[in-house]
Image (cartoon, rainbow, N blue to C red; front, side, top):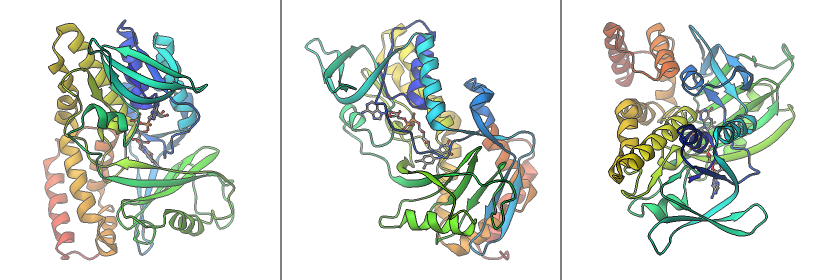
Length: 388
Ligand SMILES: Cc1cc2nc3c(=O)[nH]c(=O)nc-3n(C[C@H](O)[C@H](O)[C@H](O)COP(=O)(O)OP(=O)(O)OC[C@H]3O[C@@H](n4cnc5c(N)ncnc54)[C@H](O)[C@@H]3O)c2cc1C
């Protein structure tokens, strides 16, 4: 049983169904996941995302400092794909169903146990009727702050979250007067006025664009900050199609399984990259690893196999998450550090290594000289020896 049909749940259900297992996927219908929709080529490759789902192909990111300095970071050798989550998530769910997963629509309410100890997901169907599914294994992939996850593994609390808010607006016509916008360019804005501890963004989605910001600071006005970004870009009068927000977890949970029959995936497991807020690729990978762990537990009859989902994920991505966490703590502190951070982005080595690790999700090991150079530049900026 998979609870949640977002990138994590739909990928897990698809993989399990393809492996010939009997799997049901429950998703509550009717809400589009608020999301910037940026995905790296690695996600497109590993999860066979068809080209028609890409609403835009981004070939440059402009990094903007508190003083308004713009540093273009052209994407070499490829592009960043932009998906529309309404269409993307539904396509993933349909793919899982076509592979043989049973689709259920409704809201999961509780994890229960039958008299024989088997897990039961109690849910309310779309029509409001109570229903239940018994399952040998349960993958919980129902997004951040999952109450079911807390029921399954009570020893841990939800991870710290950034709350992200965005507005989907009609994209301006090319060359519209007074508008600083390009259909193939993302803007990433580091400025305490638009986010005191994260960043604000403009991500093109073809006919629309996502403009938003995030912060973990209680009381910070995400709506006025988004209005400020729109004003600066000349997009204050653009037609607003949707306004929405959601929490982004900022730290992988210590445990993803209950040692018996439940394993967490995606935002439910807390796997969004710190500093960037990137979660779609990691959710899909988390779903895949959870499905793999369930298959191994079924084949061996040993529930300890469920722990491999987290072990494998952290082996490949734990280091990057750790580095990004430190980056966020240091560089997103105040406008002085943000100004230095943006200055550092002018460096061609920084640009190359950033893109290579984002696009392919591998720490670039060749070219150790570039790493050393960046380390010393980092230190110079941190200690205030370099001028922003
Ligand atoms: C504003 C914003 C912008 C973002 N921008 C980006 C970006 O540009 N790129 C990127 O990579 N990441 C981005 N992220 C993060 C990304 O959206 C998430 O990390 C990703 O969606 C996680 O996928 P998931 O499948 O784990 O969870 P979700 O996408 O949250 O999916 C959970 C699913 O579970 C269902 N569900 C929830 N509760 C229940 C229940 N009780 N019963 C049944 N079903 C349930 C929901 O309907 C949903 O379909 C952004 C996040 C936010 C909030």
